[in-house]
Image (cartoon, rainbow, N blue to C red; front, side, top):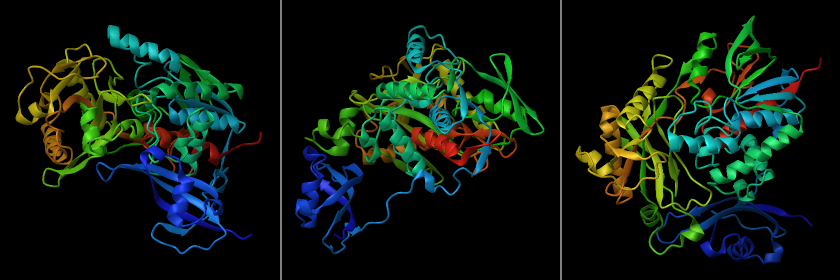
Length: 524
């Protein structure tokens, strides 16, 4: 029997009937359920564009013996997705057997695991703690305020992504990011992440995932060295030859560097050793908190069961300062928690995280302003440090965060008291303009006024916690687009957010898989 393949777009399904795709598709196409074969979900999302009537929207692929008339929603199916084997650059780079990977964030973890699976002998070095110990390190910091520069919200197994919302959505769903999601399912995450348009894990589910990934890596013969920092490296005729870890030098054949976007020491070391870097644009601003009930009401409408939808999100953008700047939301965490995002003593920045249920009473999101690349290589880092030092000092030099209601910020007044915040080390009233430059504050103020028109109550019920400076790295380590190798240093491969090429958990991990897919073991 000859079958015809079709895509059906935006198949609408009521909230309470999530996953009941076959009867809905039969009704939409006029086919009997038995006539629909090989039904596959390609993508699904919560459609809340019509306030008060959110529903599930599915994109599906199916086959049927009957020839159907194409419509806006129903079109003949294209070929199925490509695979890692179809990458035209697969196995195009020769690499010696022994590979040293630095950084156990998403890029480094997936590079190490994928290379080990492929037959390489991989040693993975991480300056911080394994994820189980990392929880204790962070908890002790919130209690005694004694900062551990190697194990904190930014550094340690899992990288900065381990203490975030765990968002897995990516604008570039490709063979590499699909392989990451497939691995996550292999390590115990719900298979919904393969098809849900905005999947997330949450910190609580990232921990067992990381344990499972580490267990497989070790079972294949890989080695992990925690509490072991890269301190220096040497070149020989433009090639990586040695690396220094915790005071001890060792020979290295290939060095894969996946440091994360806050490894400032490494940026400076690379520059000193002649590795080509460049400044890049980034963004900074503040975190804002609102009652989750307000966001639910404004985004979904009244009387919507959030047990079926999950807590509501927002994505906001505004052209500001007479179209010369912008303000936009970044890394929004429904039902989340604010955490101290610190990589150096005497500085303070904010970040947001959430657990898998996203059921906290407060929502938080970064509202940031774009910053053009600096004329000097480390100008962006210097700007970040300046704001972070101001925040630390104004907060009382004990990692309490400066905060101000949006209403007071706009009126130029200081709050006598602050609403409740989830910030782990507490908040203190301040003027945000004492921390951030006027141009950034003016753009934020303009953005808040515009966001109020989209989400009424955004100003009156909003609390600012400052500053948000670690959206991405202000520095890029320049690499070859195809091989991911440094353009100036042979044997040095640079990956992830720290290299300045990705943004988020999935794209960073995909960078690691891309590297492993494009290298092959050189014969002795």
